[in-house]
Length: 127
Image (cartoon, rainbow, N blue to C red; front, side, top):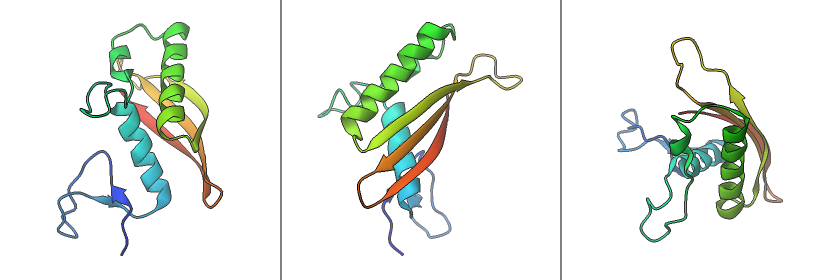
């Protein structure tokens, strides 16, 4: 079986006796790459300090329209720079579930198109 990359968030693959679970499909790989990009803090990578976003700084901010616009711009800017063939169609903010008062739930609808493979999917990030 062919594998594309390591699945993010990291989990062990005890079924196949590998250290990390891996992505088999392009769709899984795209979601892992997008999640990795968005949850990596800027200045976290040594040789690419601008890789990532500052989404984690919004966790304790008031969830208002200004913060939502800033988060949406942060996501779109990072994706345009590091995954240019992925287009963010929409960024929506979900209401926290009961007992998750301080959570920030982001629903990202995206399309990937590289002239060979095209697909649309949704990623939910819970901060």
